[in-house]
Amino acid sequence: MPVEWQPVQQSRTHELVLRSIEERVVAGELRAGDRLPPERELAPVLGVSRSALREALRVLETIGVLVAQPGRGPDAGARIVRNPDDALGRLLRLHFALGSYSLHDVLEARVVLERSSFEGAACHAPIEDLDEAAELVAGMAEPGIGVSAFNDLDTRFHVLIARSSGNALTSTLTSAVRESVRPLILRALEAVEDWPATARALNAEHRTLLTLVREGSGPEAADLVEWHIRGLHGTLVDGPDGPDGPD
Image (tube, rainbow, N blue to C red):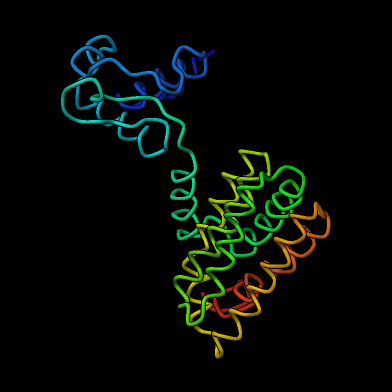
């Protein structure tokens, strides 16, 4: 019987370095705050070139698990960190822009996440987080506030509530999903015919949401935030850039 040969899977050198570091993180040998050995020491230990090592470290920095400080001294070198929010948001924005996920997919994910966030915040939010949220709502009510500034405060409000929900993963995912559609929401707000009236209506919903969270009315806050999201985000899905509109 003839032997059936299968192609041997090849890995680029930097991928082998990534796998080696990942295995040590998963095994608990590397933790947040730990420093990696200097390149001149680590490269020969791993049996790779310093350029391959640098490529692997750049990937780890991009995905938010490592920060590299160039130069000399006690703060120089690569250090393991926990910084998933910005990295995940960046990746999700890119995949969304490439068409990996539809507007409808993002809408439904956002509804699920923010319902959970507001319900959790109603039970767990520290008073200082709610006071900060109140400042954001007050900022959105400033006379003459522009669309861009409003959108920034709006994003920070929703991300803050997610952060105060008591679930770190929900907070990270909410932040990533909200950031992924920030440019689209901004364009939708810029296109409204009566921006001052729209701003007042949106902020009235923000005030009510915050009141419900302060009162501990989780289910009611969850229902309202879903209605709030579907109101604006839903117009993006149903509009000309949505699944039923032109590509």
